[in-house]
Figure 1 (tube, rainbow, N blue to C red):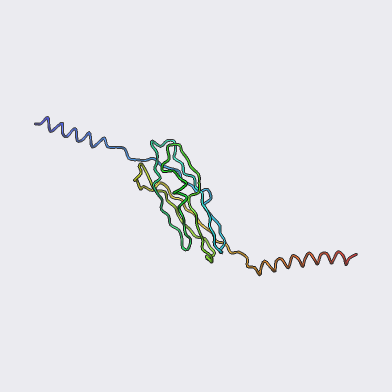
Figure 2 (cartoon, rainbow, N blue to C red; figure 1 turned 180 degrees about the horizontal axis):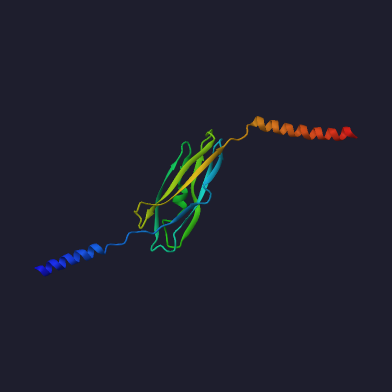
Length: 171
């Protein structure tokens, strides 16, 4: 009886101590250009990213989804991630492509709008660990009004005409 109890305890300890190692593979996640510019009249800017799995990873890393935050009224379309990035990255693999598109509606106030984008995934197709987060900003810039453009053009024409008259008058 004592032998059976000792074997049972030894078996439980062996099973308990030989659990699978924690999944620690990682990715490198960077935006090609984290700052985009758009006019206050509205428009869209695409952001490209590079996602790579170090060759030191022991297995493929699954890219299962994303999450993001962006300041209103800017909207984010993550269709680029869904259509351009693979379901998983093998050790040593890398991909660079369009990740998402930011859209500023017409009459957006000028300023800087901040946001973040997180890739979610892990060891298998159902993992939801945060793999990496990048921050980005969208700067809306005012366009010169049509009156300013008209006055600038008229000033240049006046100056060119005045210079021609000076040359003709000095002869």
